Length: 110
Length: 113
Image 1 (cartoon, rainbow over the protein chains, first blue to last red):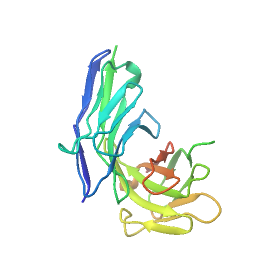
Image 2 (cartoon, chains in turn blue, yellow):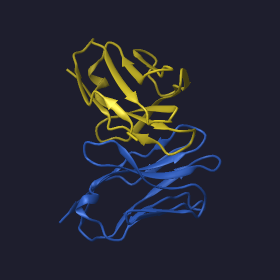
Image 3 (cartoon, chains in turn brown, cyan):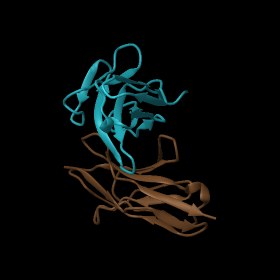
């Protein structure tokens, strides 16, 4: 079945550091891929998405490229801020309800 | 356009009581999903509903849990005879159609004492 594996946290970075959160997937067919973010005490918000191979999703300085050859969708940001502290979920959408990774907690310190 | 509304935000129940969690999807959204989040874990799919129909309940425990999405009114997730292991955050999400990005509510945090 479909599955998502993302790097375990927590990840702690200093402000302005470079961020990478790895995500790989297993799926049949041609799924869409998403990154959702959950700020403390809140629900999940869609951060970015990609619907086909080689698509790059981007939002708020975050980027992720849908790479079919490596079945990956790694999240990157060039310079993180304290306000980026949250839990990030890699998500796959195929012919089944969304499949979530376990989430990666990011803490950015000033 | 209001987002997905869940209530209550926090719910405390004693073992053996019933818990009712409500979810009003975004206007124009006819697909509703319920997910459960345990501490420090990802979201686990529970059930997918459209108006008056359960489409996929493969993630629902076989006993004590039920869900509905009536023609009028919010979707309800009902947990009968709660146990301590039911303590979790329950999130509702809605979408206008299948495989569209989901819009999440802020969740209901259930604590069973």
